[in-house]
Length: 281
Length: 303
Image 1: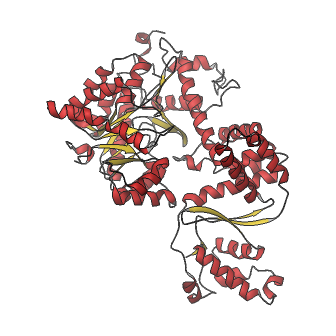
Image 2 (image 1 turned 60 degrees about the vertical axis):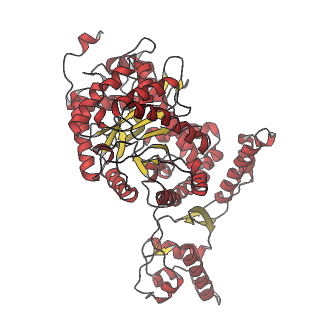
Image 3 (image 1 turned 90 degrees about the vertical axis):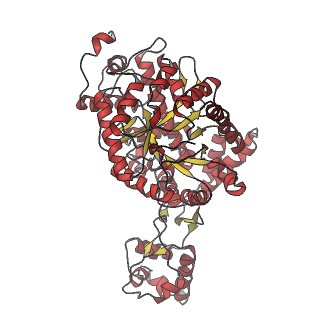
């Protein structure tokens, strides 16, 4: 698959998230998988089974780190302890790129452990881009930021979400982890056309895709990662692929996790769309 | 107010921080009794008004309802984690009191770490300073909280290169400072909560395998097991071996020697912690040697 500076010039294919219920299957059956994505924070510990399993996985597979609490969008400086531990893990995994979310979640040393939405303002974009640059300089690895699902919008916003994403990544000169399910979820929650979003994203900066399932409630959609990917999300994925070219893709399945085969087969559905794009390229 | 009227001025960096403080305060505020957002914000203003001041409504949800999604997600996530980490404490207190404790503790001690693994870091101190949350089970609850925190520490704390018995025999006992593995916690307990926790976990496992059994009702089981729990002094080591967390009961003398290593005592100094009676008994030398052989085999001692 085409490589770019934002994914470390790698040609990764279709991966899945490394999750605890699948550990035994993966270590004993050694299934063929292009790559695994790990949640960095689950392995930023000092010892024990998490690191032992990770080392066993690293012997056989390619691993990419995905974080959930760098909080580039928090208005205050990065957590130094977090960064130090993250760097230790980067050295261990040799991840070709590292991703985290375009969001905030901590303030005054208190952590919400959520991916809170950002006001789409120039002040927020500037702060966020500075922090991404700082993290990349410290970690010495390309960084890609992921668009999140959101359930609220702010009066103070000065631009659309896709304009904000572009503003941040251009200022930071970083990559994008484009989550097409999140685009779909937010488009429904905030009444915008998801194609407008995808058409505006700087395609040359897309380092990776995320696909996932979600849960529909009466008045909103929640990003739960506990279902297969729905057809409209696959269609958005295909549309995005046409703009970016074939790009590393990962299926997220984090709750009510089915068997390894079911998760992997769901991820491999992406192959059809990638092949379509390759044929028409 | 229409958007066109609301957004004439660009947000400053300071205002950006203030917005995050405002939203975090609302999101981290405890849920109401009906499980939704409270009607008053932390500063006493109507929450409806506060939410409308910074969050846009849409055609389906008010500003308050949109903010409430985050408020609920915050508490569901933290409570899930707290329940996972403290099944024994929940068994000691019962569901209702445990829920109240969880809310009080997490309200006063919101997460201060990027990892949810550290959520219970201040719980022991909290229980010691606010014992009314667990009265009249204060000592028992504290024992259980200490055990369950020790398990978390044992699971993923560092393991330093262990000292083997051969290496121990070669060191200068008067000068060499020994340490215990960071994953090992020593506990002096007033109740056999180690056995109790094992029984609770076994009962939960059995219930999962036969969920239609009458006996398997969790609250009933917990009450039954708790009735059997009588006070008894227990000296315990919680540690990791081959990536699995274990409990090991210790003799009082062994506990004192090991505790001395926690304060970086030299080998000879640690052995002085043995009481006069234990130290002068005819088999004292053999007993201490056996302890060290066991500790070395388990990899507990390091430099």
